[in-house]
Amino acid sequence: MTYNKLTLSAIDYLISICPSHTLKGEEQFEQYTHDYTEDLVFHPELVLKPKEVAEVSKILKYCNEHSICVTPRGAGTGLSGGALAVKGGVLISSENLNRILTIDEDNLQVTTEPGVITEVLQNAVKEKGLFYPPDPASKGSCFIGGNIAENSGGPKAVKYGVVKDYVLNLELVLPNGEIIWTGANVLKNATGYNLTQLIVGSEGTLGFVTKIVLRLIPHPQFDALMLVPFNTIEDAARAVSAIFRTGVVPSAMELMERDAILMAQDFINDHSLKLESTTQAHLLIEVDGNDEATLMNELEKIYAVIEQFDCGEVLMADNEAQKSNLWRLRRVVGEAVKKHSIYKEEDTVVPRAALPELLKIVKSIGTEYGFRSVCYGHAGDGNLHINILKDELSDDFWNTTLNEAIRKLFKEVKRMGGTISGEHGIGLVQKEYMDILFNTTQIELMKGIKKVFDPKGIMNPEKIWM
Image (cartoon, rainbow, N blue to C red; front, top):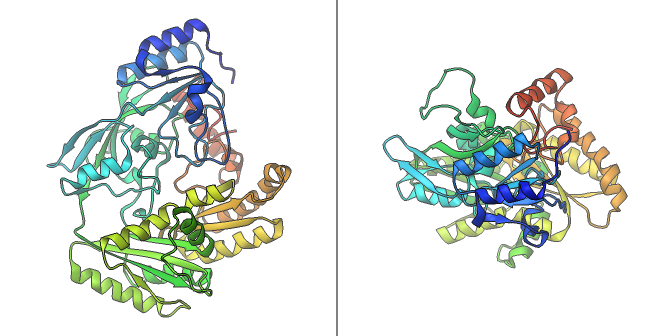
């Protein structure tokens, strides 16, 4: 696909659409040249920060007419390069589309713009006794619009589901500037194709979301949190499926191997949690609900299961501060690893009973190819984040041979009935592996959908597909 560079007249026109919310000149672009993906850097030609849907519409209409590529961007916390302006052009940031418009307590819904920080939205509805469960590790900084683009999950997904399970309707600006709603603000809708769910997870390749209607649920009154140390990571993984077989559905079940904990402790400079020399992995397990007696019964069942495995002394969080500290340790792991080394994060998912086999394969391939990995993730979903550290590996190995190892890993993931992204998306860095998951017919069907929405291919080019 060929795109036009921005001319002076194009820049002047686009600036006139939102004159006080425009950046030009590379010195102003720095924060928009990268996200959390490895060390990749790409410079847009112009950064626009519209405040109204009409401004987004005018920008897209002009860019479409003049074959100028557009990169939608949220908070820039992505891990697959989805918000990188790889072809230059215009980057549209949603940061000024940052209003929670209505909280409908009668219908348990919230209508929000995409630039609202996820945790801010969660806190706002919590004040009304309501709950929006999806909670990515970056919930304190990521935008709800970015969560829509990636179909984000987080620890609570094991019990409550991911973003797609809460999106009722979307206001979408198409690449030609036309504004549509994708669905209706109802819990059931069997009217035509489901455009809403098509947009969720489409990574900004089909249009620009400007309003979001989410369903909510009542906020659970009680929760309990425990940290369980295991002497082998395989036992930690095996315990996951065993707990679910008791009938207990935890509200979170997170796996962290030893190095993940140690790096997180160093990152936040908090070593109050003492790790025994034999401990190789932890499960962070949370249960929640509205009846304390039921929670106690569930905890007893969990204890009975973990006693069957080679584990150490269980830490039960006694108060909110201790719960917060344990969750902080889990949530900073990604940042901690990034501070330690450039890394590639693979967002694999397998049926949860296959998690022990996946962990074994990851370490085996690492030994074969000579790389180190740090594993953690949403064990209850079978969603394992595999951080491959660059450490002292050569650039040549990192950019060529490592891809061979990742391809080998992904073929094993598919063999186990899994897939290569659970919540981080495909974006820029995973697209070369899509042929492992899909045959030619499937790929052409999806590319055909892209062409219907975006005939000129201006929206987020070079993402998802080669």
